Length: 131
Image (cartoon, rainbow, N blue to C red; front, side, top):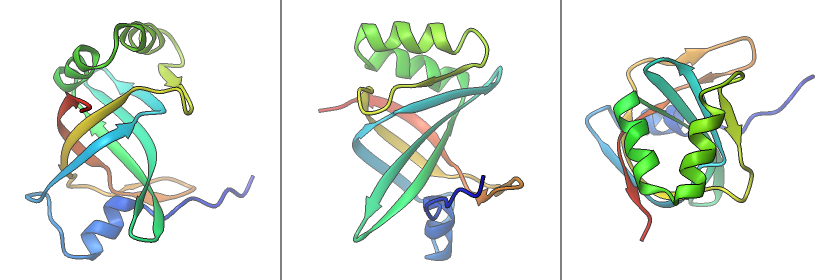
């Protein structure tokens, strides 16, 4: 299957001159897809619009930040996320009926490359409840 990915927001940001010291704040973003990559690494994927263009945004976060997420989303989302990420395939895809949160993040240090794409995840420093 030859899927066309949206441009990556992390690579786009780095190409504009932003570094890992720059803090990004995303207010009221939905988290439709969340994955447990390994014991202390989780990822969320979503699409965001910057000016006129859409970008794929990959957000990585640690176990302690994952626990923050479970505290700031409504209980039914927290239960569904916690259950889905505790059993294989360690992911949850909620589509448009997903939790909405505020995210504080910074550019990661390393570009991830696989056979389909290259992307630069942002690393989440904290989740907060959406206003």
